[in-house]
Length: 364
Ligand code: KG4
Ligand code: ZN
Image (cartoon, rainbow, N blue to C red):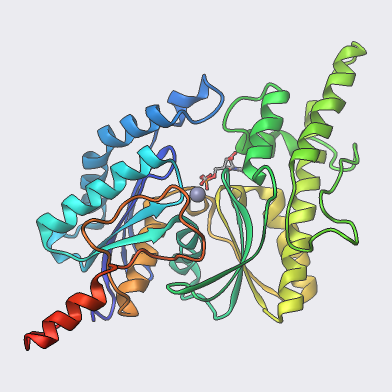
């Protein structure tokens, strides 16, 4: 197969229409159209609004990516697309578009997992993933610790959140503090002015009998809401920056503590952090400190590659082509709850087709 596969990736699992183009591990284009402003007044992503925005943005965003990369669609070695997990209607727009492009251009189609893509994006900045790599994935929909030996075929979950995702906690706390949506970036900014030790908020699931690698953020969120409410009821001013900093400290403390522990007990010396919350400045700094102390090499993509984008899907697609993994069938469907262990959705009849071909004396 192509030495440095040229792959276009499409991502529409939430509110970002992302189209990226990658050659091997080189990023050629990263075009993103976001509908986040359309959701802001609702305080969260409205699935129908997101789907409609994807539909409108798709063709221009693909065109922008091709222009940015300076490649012709006919030169592509494959089209990759997020098949799940995510919002069903939103995913469907991306999957349908990817099928149309792949079919029209006569290129193989790769339906891939959104979470594996968040991990694989690190290849665009730091080269191919060391095997094994521990991944801490923290976004608006997920918080998981995953161990991967081969990002195209082997992703093992060690732990995950049992309630809210880390990004969700940021969004909810931002709402309590009246800071708007999405909450992560603004809490991050406010926290820089505050004292992270001002309030000791609870660290979920860190007791001796708690599951080692699972997370829980709903207790923390409630503790913050209650603390703020008490201040307000007492007629006192809420020290927003201190609350933001102390909340952020609690989240990053738990995330980095568990990630380092997982690396140590599995004997893994590479940690990558991905997903929207990996854009958080305190998380990045604390992870670096703790990894340095533990002799773990840390990879965190630049913030623009941590949040949802098409380049991450293209990165995984290129790795799939590189490793000669099976492509997907044209009846590929979007799966809103695609398990993290399913890195891609291969053609269920692929083996059968290959068999029929060889029986007829044709090439596979
Ligand atoms: O990965 P992502 O773009 O979309 C999902 O797949 O969920 O993550 C979005 C989440 C949101 O909850 C947002 O508040 C959070 O990532 N986020 C941050 C930061 N930037 C984005 N959280 C904390 N600090 C940030 N700087
Ligand atoms: Zn994501």
